[in-house]
Length: 399
Image (cartoon, rainbow, N blue to C red; front, top):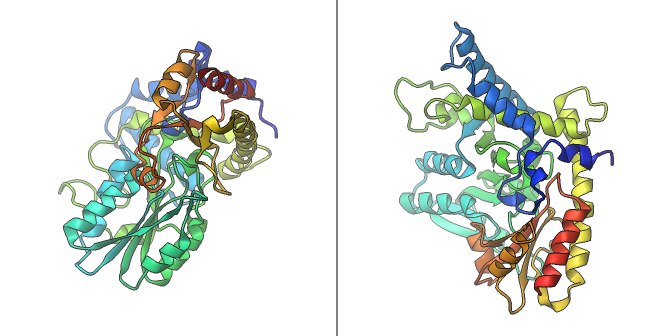
């Protein structure tokens, strides 16, 4: 591992406040190069896109560089990179577009593991179209998807399978490629929520077998926005409602209104920052990303091991719900006989930020029969062993 964590942390002004951040799954802290890219683009010169003035060309460059950066991050063509305000907005938009062709008798498959972003838009679109919703269940003993239940609900009538690449609360990483291959065997499309996954692993959309994939740069050091990509052939066939004068070219046909050029520049800077963490001798940005993210994975895994061992040392007062064999460095826990929100307040008073809530994971909480809030601790590139120890000490004191 070749990460200098002290040097890495120096790029994050928010860390100067002495806070230990474990709320990365809800949004990471922002390094200064990302903020600088936003400010420099916003202060221009900047105009709407065009090919004449310097300010128009600056806007064009922001768009082109954004598409190129996320093409490298996701291993997709730049022409298949779509900007959106958020993963939720993009999923709603694409669910409505895809549902135009759904009919009564069609079936849509969603999972109990997913953030509601990858559940409710599909359920609601199916209701409007008269299609039937089927469910992939969770095995509560392992926090894994029950793939036998998937086999039971998959059929020749299945039009779409929506599944997460990693749970935002449990960290569980289901076998997306296996799920996608089975969906494709019956002629269904596969929509993958990669919001939590992309914060911890280099994404390869074709290798996943995803027809459509969505992620959120603010989960991996960037500004608040969403990014969607998909099979170029599929994108050409989708016809969203749009303004008549707006471009009908892909990907512009899916982007409504003037793009936020400064946000695109910040999202690009986040990819470049990640690629520079531990680039190795990579000749391309994709190669540098692969090396850097592999090193970051080792760093986060070591911290997760330290955290989980420490939590187990607190005894039966702490129940860990993140227990899948393959999972991200995100830990969901409940505290026996205690209010997890009080634990959040107790930790925050000690400058340790771990959040209590349901985190829009309505289905996982219901499947695991978690009626109240749970405490989530998620690790990010800038976390340290000292951060972990402060969290453990704070929880021990609270208990």
